[in-house]
Amino acid sequence: MSASIRLTDLHSIDDEVALSTGPAWQWLPRLTRGHRFVRWQSSVVLTTYADCRVALSDRRFGNGLRAEIGAMPDIDPRFVERRRSSLLLEEGERHTRLRRLAIPALRPRNFERFRPAMAKVVDELVDRVADHGRCDAVVSFCNPLPISVICWVLGVPRAEAEFFAEVAEASTALFSGDPSTVSAAMAATEKIDSYIEDLIGRRRRDPGQDLITDLLAAAEADGATVSGTDVMTIITSLIVGGTDTTRNQLAIALHCFAERPEEWERLRRRPELVPAAVEEVVRYAPTAYAMKRVADEDMELDGLLLPKGTPVIVMSTLANRDESVFPEPDRFDIGRTFRHPHMGFGWGLRSCIGSVLARAELGEALTVLSRRLTGLALDGETVWSRPDTIQGPVTLPLRFEAV
Image 1 (cartoon, one colour):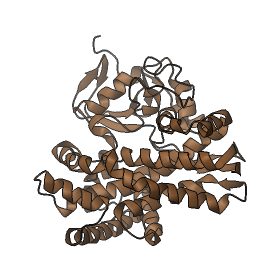
Image 2 (cartoon, one colour; image 1 turned 90 degrees about the horizontal axis):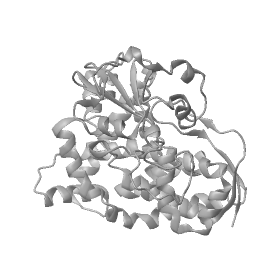
Image 3 (tube, one colour; image 1 turned 90 degrees about the vertical axis):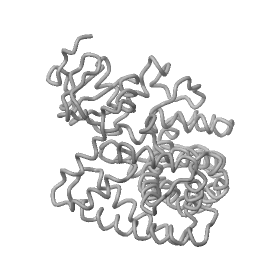
Image 4 (tube, helix red, strand yellow; image 1 turned 45 degrees about the vertical axis):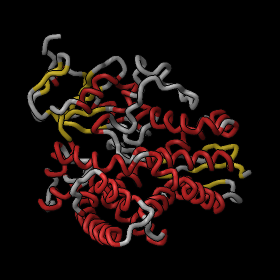
């Protein structure tokens, strides 16, 4: 195909998006169906599995969030560089090196020891609401679980969960694009950096059964010279990314099941489906429904001209609904067999390094909740956060019967 399609030639979805409410994965497929490329404000939106995979694997595409953060008003340049050094925003050789350091410590077998603790936390959370028969699942389950798990994984007292919750939320708010969050995010980053730096020093002197010790040991086994900054970057990325995305994804999972009680009862009868259910939830309704990239040089994508600096949105929620890859993509089926990986956790070098932990948390949560709760149903209106690449319920009223 000749390079002849320009941004101005593309169908714009600006007006439709402005009128759309609720979760993005419900209305985006409707707005973009039949269009391989669409325009959303100044960005090109990629809608197919193949194109999204290219944008996440081709090194000519850079990280779109890096430029956005640098353009925020009244932001300290030192803070920009600190945030850009996170795994979410890092690029090039350092990004590859940090991933190489992190992956051995983040293998599935390393998290098996934490699964009993995860299940215990969920059981405790259910105990608090079992007699009531209803709750706001975001408050009762989804917010407290990831923070408690992070405390277990890092080997810090659960009493410090509130601290982690506060700084993680403030740090994550930076990526909303709201300038009013900048000062709070900068203060939160300083707090979390100071805490983790101290924790790393303690683990060097006195190793424990925790992720920081694993990271230090993995680096030593590899013969790598690992700095405290490197370990701090990995840990803070897990705290900030793992808490917000996991709580959102669990809330989304419960919303999906509450809308489809037959699938919840199917899961109760067949707990062996939990791993497949986790994958289907993340495919069908990923909390990280889009990823921002940017053309780092003039290029073309199968006929579409992308001048240097063009913002590109990799719409993972649309890639996951590509019917050429996922049969009956709009059907939520916890027994689905995956012949190709979904993009709910990214792709390749842009895949989420915390996906192993997220899968373990979601799996243990669904295992315990489906065992202990029947008759899961919505108990009022679900309020959704504003869509900005990550989305989830702000409130999720549920009713149930405890068994």
